[in-house]
Image (cartoon, rainbow, N blue to C red; front, side, top):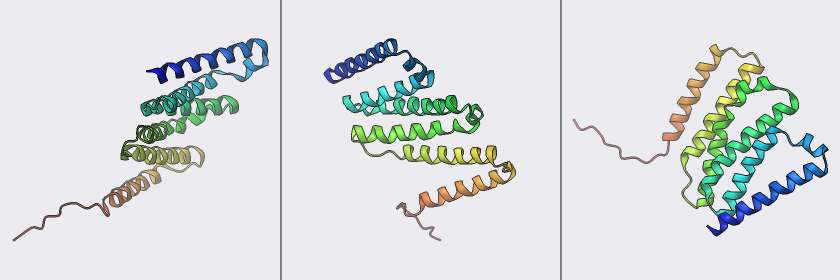
Length: 168
C-alpha cells in the first residue's frame, strides 16, 4: 500500500496548502464554496484512482465530481430549478466512472457503463425538454417507448446466438 500512502500524503499536503493560502489571501475564501469542496473530493478520488492503480475509486470520483459540478453551476447562476432534470446526469457519472474504472483496472469494458450513460443521457434530454420547452408528457412517453424499442432491436441485431428451428 505504498502508493496509497503516498497518494494520501500528497492529498493532505494539497489540503494544507489550500487552507494556508485561504488564511494568507482572504479573498480566496470567497472562491472556495461548498460545491467546490464536493467537486474537490471527486477530484481527490480520481487522482487517487490514477496514482494507486485502483480503478474502483474512479466511480465515487465521477459521482462526487459530477454532483459538485452541477451544484457549482447552480450556485453561480442561481438556477436551482435545474435540479428537476440535472439529477438524471448522476446515471451518466456512474457510467463514466465504470468505464474509467475498467480502463484503469485493465478489465474488459463493461456494457453497464455504456447503458447507464445512454439511459442517463436520454432521461436528461427528456426531463430537460419537458421543463424548458413545455413539451407535453403525452408526447414524451410514446417517444420513450419508441427509443426503448430501438435500443432493444439494435442491441440484438448482429448478436450471434444459437437459433433453433422448430421441426414439425
